[in-house]
Length: 488
Image (cartoon, helix red, strand yellow):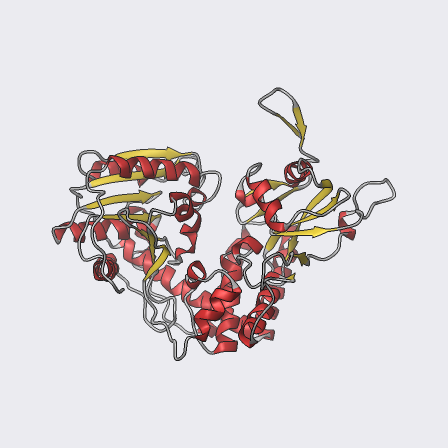
């Protein structure tokens, strides 16, 4: 495969059969290898997709460098981010003296060593300094499958993502006896910072919905509501692109901690979130943003804030009208226990098999069997299963809540951001277009060439979303700073 560059030259991208799909993205490995080869210190590069111990695929790059010092992991990541989208940047970089070759003198990908990172120890005092940091380093090495992790290395720069973060926090609770919300990684993304959080005497954080993603700056804060599942980590890249002077906060769904039942109505959710943000910021103006089902919750939050005499700017992203969720209106909430949840997951496999050719059944069943065996063999896996159960409970409750929500016309401004490449069956009415009509004068709809709401929040689409959002906020006369409360 090849592509034309802007100057007319042809760039060879590699073989078309070296294509993988990771977290919803179809990736050409040859394009990553070509980008790596453009780095002055790289003589040869090979990229493959490997499964980690949790069964999640990740990109691993193998490099043979030119004579002299090898580039650092951070240098390679920064270089690649200027060449290719973020989702194509490998999680791990492994340096080799020479590539293993086949009899035909081609790279023997099957002979490449296991994915063990060679993270360089570059920072001063990067080695663990006390027992807590030693323990945390051991856990990070287990979750990230990497060696020589420094205490100042950023979790996300080492290939961490939401699934690995969940695994890490299960282990943290088991070792330290303290349950932390996943959003702690935004405030403490290094071993040194996380050890400081854990070392606070008698520190037991309450489960709060309001979480600071990027708290700095004097601009009007943006309060972000995620879709089903309620995990605010999806907004990390958007908050980063909005810049260090734009405060961004996420609102986690109630019920993810397993201690409280999730809300089952949109007005209840909105009332809970509004109370939290007004405790933090007593008076507006406010900017409220919601993605997918979170857009409906943000819509109701804006209605309640306007009813309280506050100025609000509302942003919804790929949000469907409640009528689209009608099939969920009368579904029962997931109140049964963990064993029945596991049985329910097994039964869900049957309809999937019916849609596949018989020849593919064996591989699907084998994958399910391995997954169930792994869940039955370790305590950490049992914790992981319990967390999945909690997420499923929140998801089911949220879908039921939005299906029963009654939409009223909103008097303020609405920015409606749609994923224009999303597949919508001919038998389905695309209700994502309605929000400009439900909003007041000055509302608008913009379309971004993404295929779903999740892709709106990652490269290459989140950059365009950020520009639309900044333009809209810059035009809004409500977007003036107001004093904040001292405590949450």
